[in-house]
Image (cartoon, rainbow, N blue to C red):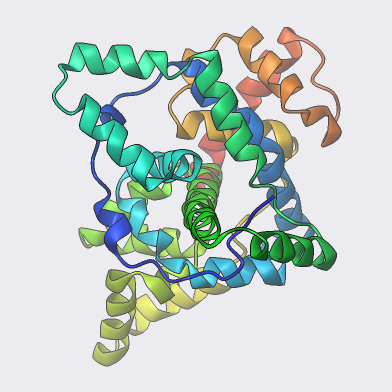
Length: 320
């Protein structure tokens, strides 16, 4: 397992990633579901920690330090596609993505879609799975130290490439987690709230801050908006902002945290409404969600829980 343990600030260049036209298309569901299956257990652990902490974000000191160091990840909330690109860059590296983009740039949309569909091949999925497996988060000080030692043993070029990919993965991890969490708390994603906030919607601004406080530290617009309110004496806005900052990110109990996190992730990437319930059941079993809650027994059981999830989301949204 290799991690970015000597995290460097993002240079801003990563926000101008080469926009490979293929990234504008949605790949076949098998590759998307593979990622959901791999990440759901880790997201569930974070959600459980939130519930234990009264709904407040409480990363381990090591992860919190990385989040703050790489806080510029908040700048990708303005575009859903950037979150997916971060994951692909973590798996294949910047050079690999750049070379691939050059190859498909001149192709027609139909040809590009054929390539996207081909990305769901067994070989490609295995490569993605292997890349994701290398990004296991250390769970103890001893594991963090072991990861540092392992990283230090690598040749310089390999070490630097590992660090770069780690940066992209962490940015994907934080942005996708908070994007899904916002969907569960507010009924809308961060990638919908941020553009509204940038257009002057203070309500969207406040909701976004409640989900990810890093915005106030690392997003120029959010820093400037708060400073302007302080300079102009906007007491009402500042009072609402203080409430959102102090308010727990997650309010109220989620009865089925593992299932709801998986459903929220599927909804976030646009696949929830297009999957058969049998497919979602298989995904739950393959992700090992029975380790986090009562076993999801059959399709009928899943259908009932899915209906409850949709009602829960509507109620959550109406409370805003």
